[in-house]
Length: 333
Image 1: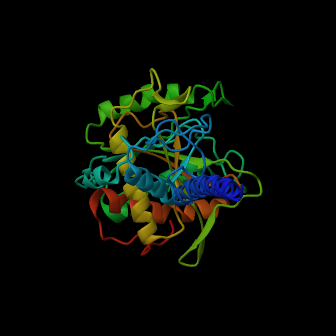
Image 2: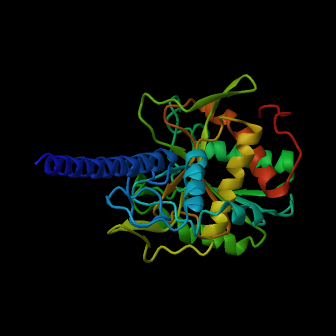
């Protein structure tokens, strides 16, 4: 009887050891998952269907990773350079910094013929202390001075289009402004074959308590933000191209904003906010070197907006010409 009892006790101990082993194994798996989450492999804890796409809040499951390295790079890229609207995501076939760096963004400066076109899809956009009816106090006025600097300081011919695409019968109407803009801007491009760079200059809209200001060379200066539409939108958990809103120049658009943001951070840290990525096309499909720029917001003063024209002109010139001129040797005019 005693031998039998000892045998039973040994079996109980063995059974207990197996349970401990399984518990330790489960804890180990859980620890690995936690490590991956904090390292970024699970994109901050949100499981996604496609491991090559960033931030899809509609999905809550995880499939086997295909390329941890590329995902990590894309996450880092987003953290440093981009704000991504919830309607879209970062597609690694588009956001490749090695491709961006190889893209040829240079033009040959020419003062007697336009090389840059500046226009305003939303010409009514004004600032906190803008005088009613004073065009010079709006984003159009800033655009005029930006063109003057590009020509006078950098020898880059600039055509400024002041047409009001956001007015219908004398009343502001944003709806349909991009459609009204396109035919007019295409005509300008057709009639001015030397134009290589197209800039749609806007003023951002923010909460009334938000101030987009930095101090550059002792002057309060409105911050800027580059804006890209990537023609891709989430549909049932898949990032799909937006039908009817194609952009043959999308990759060059993205390289342009990436490089100009880099130059801004190098020359004027804090001047350029992160690049905003949205789903649609906007005004970026008519030339490879197209950029939509948000300069300040409705909470900035006119003076702060005008102060931004100098560094903006410099980083544009630096990006497209490698110019060593310094726009800060300016006198206000």
